[in-house]
Length: 139
Image (cartoon, rainbow, N blue to C red; front, side):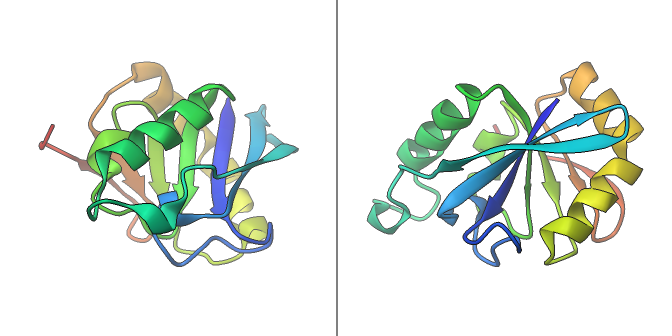
């Protein structure tokens, strides 16, 4: 399962919305191991949003990450486009700034993450800040 972490520097998750990251660092999570694959740069030009929660921007990010076979997206913050992102990926809201620490948390939650990805629900995300699964009803 491939995971995309929203970052500018590869060390910390960004404190802005997921789609505003300069890049997405991709990791493969398999059998308790996380292996760095590569960085994919965000080509959606986040500063050129027409409106807050721009659906065009969301579509660009979805396309970019689907090309990489991403199944899970991780960030400190998701904006209003989470309602679009959740249709394609399992979003995880991370309570930890450090990507290294966040990756440990993902390994600890691997069974839970894998089950939700396999169930392929299109309206659930995980909030690790309060260890909950949140349902989005707005489509």
